[in-house]
Image 1: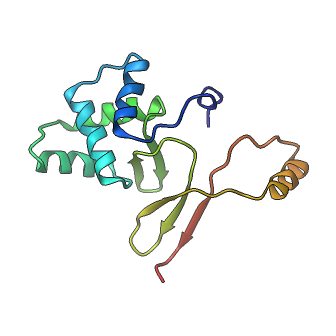
Image 2: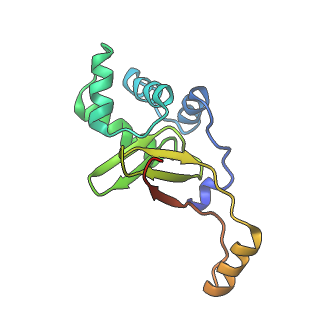
Image 3: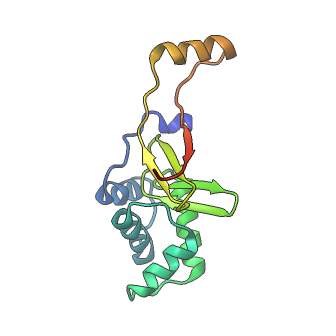
Length: 144
């Protein structure tokens, strides 16, 4: 998490995402609204290509370039999440700090909130000499 994000209230709804865009002076174009609406509707991690395809299937005409530019602008401002994977970037609606379960069967990423015990955090700080201010954990596994 960027230091400047520490004091910013987490975005937990589509309306809050739009409001954050406006607070930051970002233009809320029709295309930007489409991208945000889709991410909040689907509530999963999607590639830029999947976002482009889904929007056009819904009859919301938007170009490839516009999708990519909006995703970069929104993730760059911390309004949406960008997850770097070996086969490309995935975008999700949750921008506040959280962890992921990576399902190796379906290739899906599931958002989870994990709170580590305080004594474990202190032990990590003692071992590293670094004061922990935030953390994200990636879990990997197969469906049961």
